[in-house]
Every structure is written in structure tokens, then in C-alpha cells.
Image 1 (cartoon, rainbow, N blue to C red):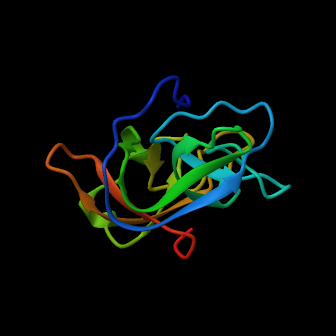
Image 2: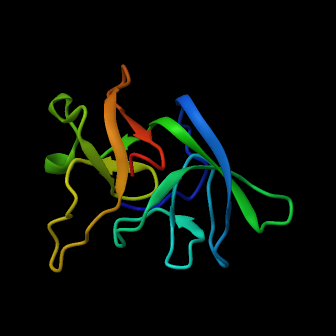
Length: 141
């Protein structure tokens, strides 16, 4: 999977919090993408190659570009493909970020060596179009 290259049209319900986080230098963020903490505690776009803590959905950068607003809640995301796809049977279980806007039911990507994907949150349901709705909060990741 590939990270976003433009804003992601994603909805959020049951919004729980909107928090400011310090931004890691040299990163590009797109509205609607998931973000995670790096080893220094600064946010970067979520990816499947580092099992870091996902903190929510990117909203916008501050005017000075040093911090970003991140929101928690039930976020509509894209579903992984094939054997990684989330199904109704996975509702209530943890799901994992395949990139900054896609979730998978599997923590490992099965590669050699395998990537341990970061936990995106809990699968709470699906939209009418079949997109996963993920409860992404600091408590669920």
C-alpha cells in the first residue's frame, strides 16, 4: 500500500478529542491520514513498516508548521485487499495500519522479513459502501 499524496475524504463520528502534537521535521501530511509517533515522540504519517503508536487522524498544521491538530474518534478508512481485508467477523477486534489511510486485519504483512504494522484501533463497523470504521483513540492503539 502507498501513503496518501492528497487529502483523504474520510468521515469521523464520535469524535473524542482534538490534540496538538509536535511535528517531525521533513514530513508531509495530508488531511484525513493517520499519524503515529516516532521514537522522539513527534508525529509522522502512519506506515506499515514501523509498529509505532498511532495517535489519530491528521487535521491541519499550525500556522508556524511546528505542531499539528490530530483528532481521535471513529474514523472511516480504506480496507486492505485480499486476505488482509477486514470483514464483519473482525468487528470488535484490533486492526492495523497498512499505510496512512488503509487498515488490515493482520498485524504482520507476511513479507520476508515481515513488517509489524502499528495498531490503528478497534474495528467498530462498516459504512454502507463497505469501508471499515475504526475507533482510533490513544486508549485503543
